Length: 158
Length: 212
Image (cartoon, rainbow over the protein chains, first blue to last red):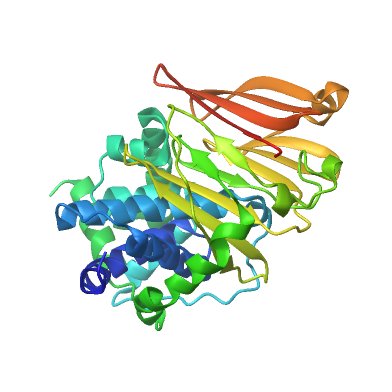
């Protein structure tokens, strides 16, 4: 990967990668670590991408795997980063803030799935393949996540 | 617009408003400058050769009392040689050094295999976490004379089974997927094995150490 192409892809997809990472991590500091690891892998990649959509999907796949590597490990699963101060975003409408916090309160294993489904337009089958789960397990988790969002957001979530 | 379409639209509008943290773009941009140093630092002296062929995979070693290394008197770093042969293909991995926020040092090696799957090997410097090996979403963790199998929210204590003769095995189901595990330790080395039955397809992941 040459510097020019690397910078182009960073400009295009940094936001997407960060949002996927944020939804797969317990805190924004972990998400930043994941983002950096993901782009290190991009920089180290030797083969060119056939098109930008393939590059986007590759980056998302790497990000999801980086998140899994992080929170699966013993010390991340057993150690909460409660002492860290979260940098919380400011939204244009209170309803959006409510949705953001409702999503943040979902278990991590639901959150990233919800994000891939609603934001990145991934299908259940694609998510199952990405997360090494059965399609039934993905459907079940999405259903539970939707129910939890509905309970918290009432009529704001259909 | 259906309810689900409204949800999707609302979700997208919300999460599009989340900014990338200040400074992150700069850090990511600087990766092209600093990576060469990282590659040189970590490659040769930590792991001489690693061969992997599996789906997403993580191997973590921690603690100076690693599974098989204590009996030779060599340190785990000196003795480290891991092979994970699946599908008859071997890949060499170069490691890079990375400092974690808690002060620990981790060595990471990544491979993108011919089939497009991503692989990772991680090695932690000796610490207090014990020995931790993870494959195919299942983790075997050994610490303070206790041995566990972890998978998602499931925790199985296999301490007694393993203590009897240095061999433990069993099966369990998690998220609708049937998995099996084996863990062994002999005078010649140690290893572990995870088998996953997913949608009727069987995948086997295993690793062991070799002493030179």
